[in-house]
Image 1 (cartoon, rainbow, N blue to C red):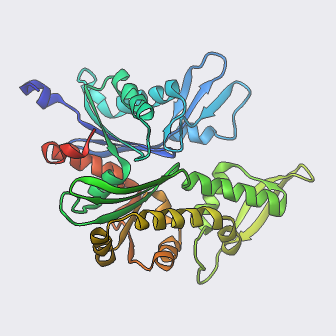
Image 2 (cartoon, one colour):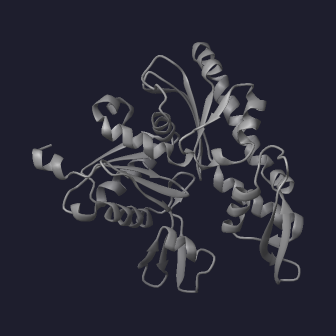
Image 3 (cartoon, helix red, strand yellow):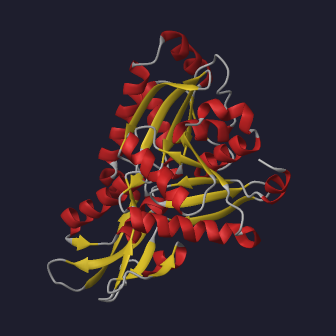
Length: 339
């Protein structure tokens, strides 16, 4: 790369998540954290809003407007809409450097197929990236947290995002054991929706379910238990209705997805070589991603595995994009973790 390209380059790290997209710009830090949602007209497919503005429209669309989450289970479900969304976000962060094609590092689930990886790469190239490198989400999270991924020491990361939960044991700049399940934040929201429908004949939307999960959701008993109001449509009377639920009920709703996550962690541990398992026993497991913020989940993991478990102390939500940032800042050092 020439001198002027280095001067004007805007290297970008992207955590292209099912629920949220975070963008890091070299020299500026994390400059964008927006919902991965696009709103457009049905008639002509014209995009009218992206990110937070589009999320405000969810569940309130008229007959000619649709809101789309173009990523499902951590991978691209709608290629055209994903390109529009990535292009919009890159334009937002490029500012005065629109004429410079950035080098981009994008995180992808460790269980992504070659087709899914190529789709992510192609989408970034078509919106103007000069070079596109991919990094697995658990590796990016481990680097972001500050774990010694290059050393001959086992580090275990549990990254619970919107679409996938990524569990990996990492050593010598590689993933030794990996477990990727499509059960994470979105599955928890859906479990709450289904539980409210079965228990109370109340239909609620994904946004209400997410709010319940964040405010009163838990994986272990709370002291004291807490309550929240929920609004929805009574499926029997067909009219709007308000109910009060407590954390015990939402914990019951979340029992299945939390059990799946704990089972996946145990499966990953079962396949871990003994030497690395000994390291994890000493050093513990680190949780990142939005799902790591679920009350009581850390305690459930300790109970289910008998291993020390910690939550990323800086910010679990930004661990992956912080890892992409460190890779861009020390590119030669971390080149071997990219593909």
